[in-house]
Image (cartoon, rainbow, N blue to C red; front, side, top):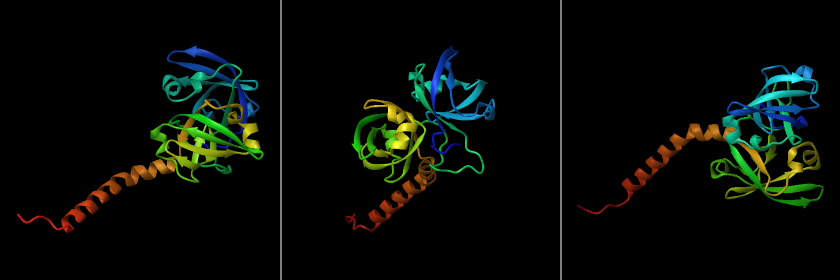
Length: 217
C-alpha cells in the first residue's frame, strides 16, 4: 500500500533480460540500509519487490504481466523514475490510498502554463475513465493527483512547481505515456453497489411498467 507521494526521483542504472521479464537496477538517494530484501516499492506507481541491493541502488524483477500492463517496458538506462516506499503505520497519508497495481496506460494530450504551475490534460482508456470523479483522486506514474475538467476519456490536473521538479511528470511532454491507477475506493463502491443498483433500476422499471395503463385484452 502507498500514498502517491513520491519520495525520490531516481535513475534507471541498468536493465537486464530475464525469463519472461526484466531486472531493473535503480539508483536512488533513498537510504538503502533501510530498504529490506523482499519489501515492496512503487516504481512509477507499479508495486515491485526489492530482490537485491548494493550501495545507492537496488534491483527489482519486472514480470511479463507488468511489462504488458505498464510503461516500465519502455524504460532505458538513464531514464528517471518515481519511487515511493510502502506505507507504514504512523506515516502521513498526504495523497490517497494507492495499491501500486496499475490499471492501464494513459497519455499526455497537452500541457499549458498556468502561473508557476502547469495544466496537464491526459487521456485514459474507457475502462479507467469510468472511475474519474470531479475533485477525486487518480494516480499517474505513482503521483497522487486531483482530477478536474472531465470530458469523456480526457481530464485535467494541475501540477505545482514542486511536483514538476520532484517527479517524472515534469520531464514528460505531450504524447508521453504514464501508468494509471484508478481510485480503489471508487472501484470498491462500484463492485459492492453495482449489482444492487442494477437490480434497483430493474425493479423501478418494473414498477413503472406495472403502474402504466395497459391495453385491454
